[in-house]
Image (cartoon, rainbow, N blue to C red; front, side, top):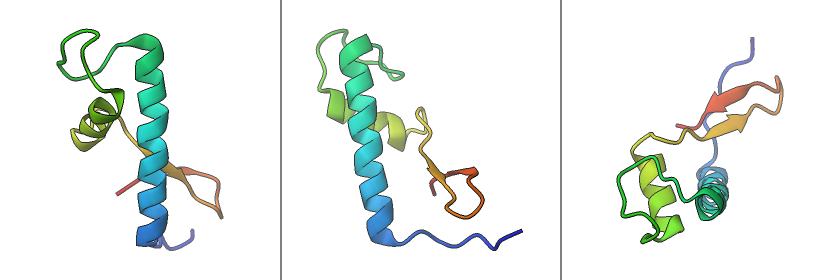
Length: 73
């Protein structure tokens, strides 16, 4: 089994930006945040960031060698 290497800081930032953008798009379509917000009265990007920070939405990274999904730390 390969040793788990820490992701480079820049890669982690871009992964988080991508995750927030994808979650914000989902929120725009569904309008159902996983944290309490006034219905229809929220900024999807702010909600997505708060959901990820509160671990309500889990961000995973695919290991390039094994192809397995790993939780972003």
